[in-house]
Amino acid sequence: MRPVFRYLRAVSCASLLFGFAGLVMAVHYWLSIAVLYVAFILLAVDSFVEPWPKRWMRWLGASMISLIAIVFSFFFVLVSAPLDIHIYANSGDYPDGSKIGNISWKPYYTDLRFAITNSSSKDYENVAIELNTDMWVAEGSQITNLPGISIHARSHVLDPQMRSRGKDHKLIPFATSGVVYDIYCDKIPRKTTIEVAIAVVNFMSPSSQDTKLSLEVLPPEKIKSLIGPKKMPQWVSAKAKYRVGLRPFSAFKRQEKFS
Image: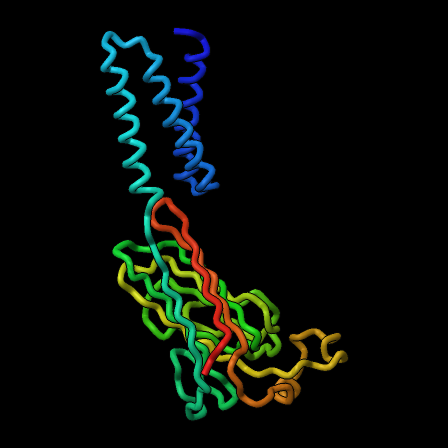
């Protein structure tokens, strides 16, 4: 066998090793897939140049490698795993103190809802959802009862009394609009919907003097004075990332009209 073909076999084996290692470690999924397909092609070429005793053995070897590539594509690449995201809102005219999930409702809250559905026959794992809206978020709670869900905001709080408790289904603190809120689910089982209620507030823009202060030292009276009339969000977006087996997926939904 010519030395170049020996190198070809070594490269194909190394490509298989690095490709599968990348899939298992969940690092650069599509790069790992490309490396694996390169390995399949090199192995097929190697099968043709191998000095088999019979010519038909070359075709048999190449056909087996092609079959492995097709099965691999079917189970790891050409996989459908839709995540349905439904966003809706209502004025939230509930009695003061009503319990919506774990939210103790207040008269100035608007009720924003997210329903996330796994309609497939597969379980979705490591589901991370980023929520964003133009309004201020006061509290958040899961309405359904799926375990392994956490909700938190990437921001400072305005009112120390509304600080996040850091546990499932608990509070989301007040934060500036446009800040991302995270929902993390260990797993969304097949044919399952989770629903999250978000209490949003029409916060008026603080004065320039207020913005120079630490957000955590603003008194509750000052915060309440900044609350405007109830209204619907102008826009809401949700961006999700999740995995099915070794393959990562993503989904995005943005809504700009609420009745």
